[in-house]
Image 1: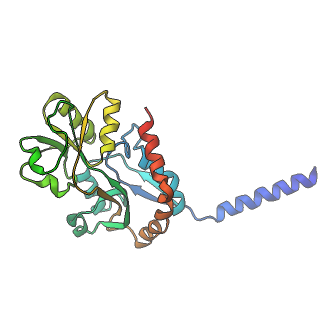
Image 2: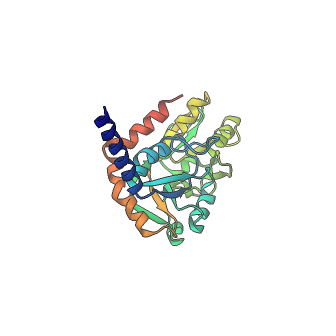
Amino acid sequence: MRIFAAITAITTTLASAAALAQPPADTITVGVFTVAPYVIAGDTGPHGALVEFFEREIAPRMHVRFQWERPTTVARLEQNLIAGRVLFTPILAKTSAREQAHIQFAGEPHIRFTPAIAVLPEHPLNALTAPSDLAGVTVGWVQAGALPPFMHDPHIRLDLAGAIDWERTNLDKLKLGRIGGAYFSDRQTARYFAARNGLRLKLLDLPVPGTALYAAFSPSAPPELVERYLRVASEAFANGRFNAYLNRAIAEQ
């Protein structure tokens, strides 16, 4: 018994010493905008498929601790990245303006959104082939949100929401007839909110390539941090691992 106790004590001491020898995880401030089911605003901070994935799959591989800021608008997120108030965001569309502001886009995109316009079931359109199909239709979107060239056509009138929960805001406007359609950078977002609000929708996919989303770092983020992400991202996203998180989030009621 004494020998067992001595071995236990030695093992505990060695384990404690090993834990103390490990360097503390770096704390990284993370900014996000809401785009369900990827990022959802909660009372204690953001949650959703993307948050869960980065917490469980990316942070341990990078040996960092993510400090998630409360969700904000895309415009404010841009400002926070540029000013260094947050160091990182998991998804952001690459634009020339953002690159000129020295936001650092890391490697290849691992997430791609399929853009669609949600309309009510009785809407006469059943498919989109050209921007002129939307002539006279006011389409809801969000301030500072990136859009494909298709949506910049002068035939299309945009109504830009400034609310953090812009998805719900635009669907409410659609239901009330204040807009004729709601643009979603990813059709899964429309499905998620429609299911939870008992709203029937018709989704019109845009005849364009999906939007590539990149992990992005503040101009003030150290290059070593960007390199650390690049070393682990491909492994973390391999074998459809992120899709499993996404499908689970959509299925949950």
